[in-house]
Image 1 (spheres, one colour):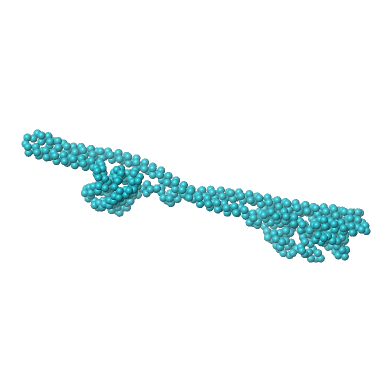
Image 2 (cartoon, rainbow, N blue to C red):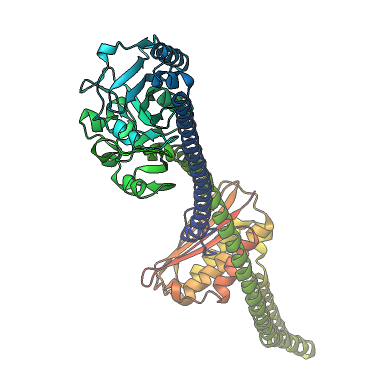
Length: 573
């Protein structure tokens, strides 16, 4: 809080800064909490959208795969029961040509089967049609191969009528080597029976997996993450890049299990679900064909559909929002800081004004009480002077005049009249002194400058204190109220010097300009400690009240042993 002697608080004063710390940090914290709440709300909504997108994609992939596998199984069983195959098994002379024609026509129309083959019970290919890149062709009898050692033949031959074996998803192998270009393949096989119910062999469809992968890619275009297709060992069948795929046949170790070990440990142990890991959000579903079988090296035909949303995608939109909110937060703080400072300053100023008003009221009450006491004392003094001094002089003059009137001797009469005249002169001088003490007539007759000079001259004569005067009047017209109060302040300051300062010299400066009156009274006396000064003493309190009632300022500077300085500034405008 400001000292009433030093004016209102500064804009960077301690009370303002203290109030600013009480306003700004809570407001900044509240704004920050709102920003974080908006961010977390948006982040949660964004995560929910990604979770829904991952679930939708996995469900869609699972539906496409299941529908495609069911269609192939249905067509395999249709081919296994068609009349052309029964005619061939019954030994009809034209049965082979009829069967090859049917397979060639079917292969061309469907365009998803790389091979359609009939193997006899010994595993020998008897009829085979190759898709041949859209130009179906019958393989000559001399080029047919034995397949008795192939796992799909062995497994399918054990099945019952109407059952289908589905191989693992892998690359087609011809003559012991992976066919180039790579040809992803699923083999569907079912046992073939003749009219008598005898097991006669196996019908095999080599499904071109590229068609399935193409469908999966078409529905994955809008997914913000990566859509993956794995086998049950964690190898990529459809991976982040083409180089990552088919590692189990091409001999590299770029697998999902190796790149995402934490996620794979959960995927391998479950059948489906969604979870967050260090690598992002994973949604998966394990698909097992109804009649799946095993393949080489213990692989089964199970497929794992995975939707992976990496952290950069998962947090991308919310991170951008956070940056935007932080910029907005910084802008709010830039606006909030001066606003909080303004509120702190206004609040401190208001509190200072309230305190100053309360102190002023307290000083006025004290001053009023002390003025009443001082007035009573002054009245007693004037009454004593009138009664004791003036009364004695008047009585003496009256007696001298009475005796002069009764005296018969002319010389005696002249002596008594002379004494009476001398007493009347003393009476007149004493009346002038009392009148000047009540109000100096020079203020009204000659103005402030001459009144001050007269006061200082009389003070020096009566007190013996040397006065050094600096009077500068740039503006002669000083209002009567200002003149009287400046005179009284100077009178009180000089009285304090003679009573308390024990100084041999006092310096008085009075500077009058068109806009203000500045009075300075400085002595080199004993001084005092302002902290121990009784600010309610009538002298200091009266001087301050006179200055402040005129809208001016009053200040006292003092140090023990180094004198005292009184400064008063009163505006004239």
